[in-house]
Image (tube, rainbow, N blue to C red; front, side):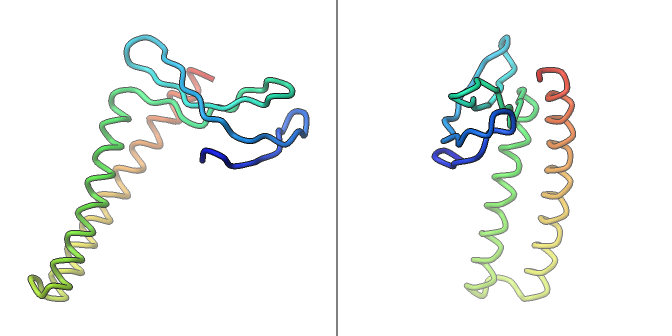
Length: 112
């Protein structure tokens, strides 16, 4: 997202996004950017320890998809085994992403 350009919803100014982080207590991390013109704050994520753990799980699931693809490509698994593994990983990935979205949405309502 760094370096992206958007228009400020408040003043209409073009904003080159400069990501910022703000800590709240020992656990909460707020990620945001501001309009240089009107100083409007745009929060795009609020993370706590649980959300960061879910982020790691999502990255690991994405890596496991690559491993399954490599195993299939190298002839270590059959096509049926590969499809079954990918479907299971996709299901778990979707469930984890949904759980993380719900937790982040809840945090956003508290810290906006």
